[in-house]
Length: 201
Image 1 (cartoon, rainbow, N blue to C red):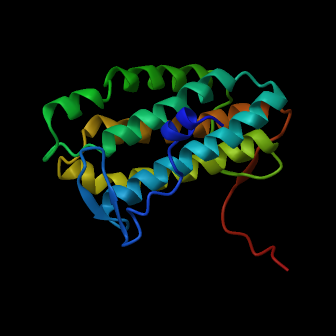
Image 2 (image 1 turned 30 degrees about the vertical axis):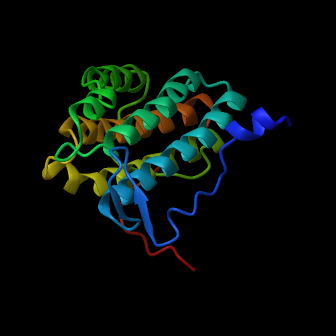
């Protein structure tokens, strides 16, 4: 490696977080267990989980790949938006990370499209024996729900745009429909929970 390459190479460790704080996009430092970082961590985990689901969708060739590829990129956009609190960030920073509200309409159209190809559902699904793509989409759905729970307080106090938490809510609905769709494409029969059972021994 040349001297010039070494000069521009950034280190993976900065040591700035050694005292338990980290910085948001606007430069503000907060404790790592702050609500903002709980939300950002859940979004990051959701992105990684979607990546695993995507790999299984590619293998199973179920047609969901393009949706997940776009969503993984959007997770970075959402993270940037959450990391830019509306109450104390500069207008230039907020404009740079602004979330496009039209994405809510887009994902709602995805939900309608995928769900229209599925049989009606009136019971809870037992998420097993559905194939790896479907199983990981179910996992992504639960992580998405947690991300939404983490973001509720930030949205309620207007620290982040309401549209971001609405999008995350719709995303969990999409992932549920996508998990069912992946199971159908995999030839799996959905097992339905029909009430409390005593069959456990």
